[in-house]
Image (cartoon, rainbow, N blue to C red; front, side, top):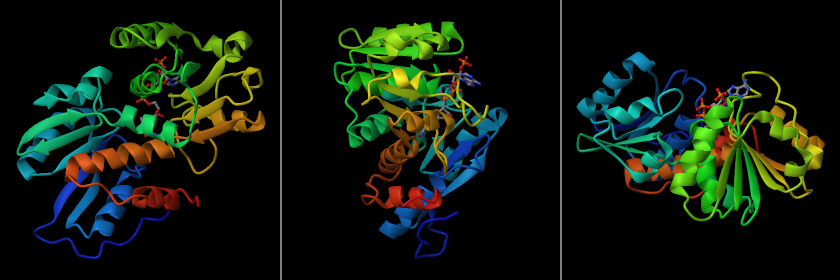
Length: 295
Ligand code: NAP
């Protein structure tokens, strides 16, 4: 697995740190992306991964204040629990009820979330046309909430949130509807709607925001062939090979992408929040694509 360009200077007494907390965290490619940007900018900084359990989260976050760590990314399962440790939470974190970034501003912990903005930027980059159309979001957790906010901002007229636990889909749809007084109409549904040909025939984009495919090895039955030929399939998961959700789209000759692009975009936004400067264009993307063995 590639690790990006080597940093031109050694770790010294002056070196400052940023990091990711997760449980598990060993698989994370965020260190690869952020360290590539530090190397390209010749910044005396490094990004490291810490395996932090839910029990240790509060003391780990207090530790970054004590040690002057500049910023932290949070991954599963910390995005919601970390909220209560923050001194301040920015609007995006409040809207999503979860944070994926903690900025240490002179000892004050500020929570933010770059997932929805990251996904929105990737959907724009891919030129996926959702304006005035229906989008189907599978899942009702934090990733699905980010997808709902992203497609609202892209002007979708209707977003169906389909989830295994139907009540959670309904709850997320109601939360989104409160934020979206005008514009997108949000509806909750069960996973059986993925076989509803009439609904699928009007769907412009299907977004998977569940770990199905990684944890289960397969995706629930979905009638890919009933979607319009320009329907786009987007998986928040990313892997070296197409995920089971995307394999169905490829077989049905539909366009698709995995969440590697979202990871890059949310990472670039986080880099700017932590360091006050933007990562040089394309550096984080190249580092991630190298690590995934892609061109
Ligand atoms: P989460 O809050 O734990 O939500 C998981 C969702 O998946 C829930 O709606 C859950 O349904 C559903 N689910 C889990 N296992 C299932 C199964 N076997 N069958 C059907 N549904 C199942 O997770 P999250 O934070 O939203 O993350 C979702 C996925 O997005 C993860 O794989 C994560 O890695 C990915 N993600 C990627 C990026 C990126 O940058 N590319 C960013 C954020 C998240 P129930 O409600 O019924 O339990």
